[in-house]
Image 1 (tube, helix red, strand yellow):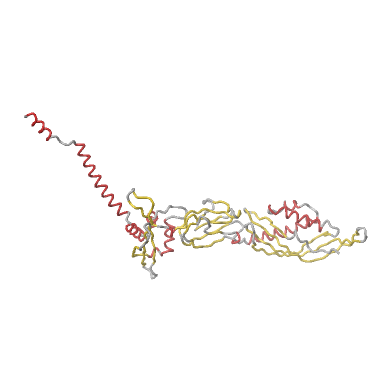
Image 2 (cartoon, one colour):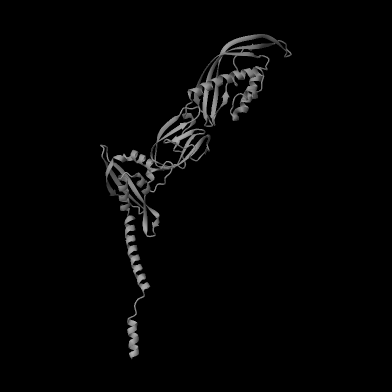
Length: 396
């Protein structure tokens, strides 16, 4: 009996091991930490808290903090600075000093709209903003609903700009030509499409600079939306204007071309002789060559034909014209005074034999239209009526 009592006494005096105590304490601390974390994250995930925090950041005028809170990705045209410019245009951001907030009713469990009215320290009216929270399909830490502010009203996504090939293009003062990915327009080989990424809504400026042309500038208002299937703006070549020096050069080139056509035709030189001196549109070269050969056959090699052409005066003007292939096109209309000598041959015998008549001379004025196309920094001749219509000369 004494032995059994001793064993019971030892059993009662047995203590809990130290490591077990530490485990109990650790579990207790983890429970407390999790409870604090749960309460904190639930409060942070509360839609009202998210909106309240947004408005406070908004009114702090710290656009860097606002940029991060709205989870924007920084790019060439999406920065805290461009966000500020957009907000200034939309809301007169710098003048806003107070706000009132109201939650609207909604039938959708995945969206919560809020109405925010901002007061300002200017004499203008208050500005109203509808802010929408959207529930994400993801969870925060697998426990909490993840609500995100809908920023679609502030963003124009997947923006592209169309501009003439060979031009240097600036968007909001920043060059995009050498810094942005670009590809030829599938519908117009003379246009490049520049990928600009996302941009904030508001007024933007474009400047185009190209050799032989005056700089072109314009401003436009960019609305929010997805521009994957359209350009935010397209600068067509027809919007550009050539410089005064370029116009003078084209007028001079036109005069030389017409003189060269008649000089070579009278000498019965091949078209390649002219093509070696002047750039002709590759796609039109065969057609122009045929027109030149017809001119020589009908008016130089014929029985009654031109023997000499002397041009005495040249007056011309240039104007922009339409080009089906979308390149820049200039039409030069020229009036040229001339004196033309010709040999008149009269038919005298029934057997189709002819007898040469005397030389005749006449003076007059002819109008020619010459079209130039501009591609990849080069002006080429697309067509000229000097090949299609011969000047008047005495035939009978």
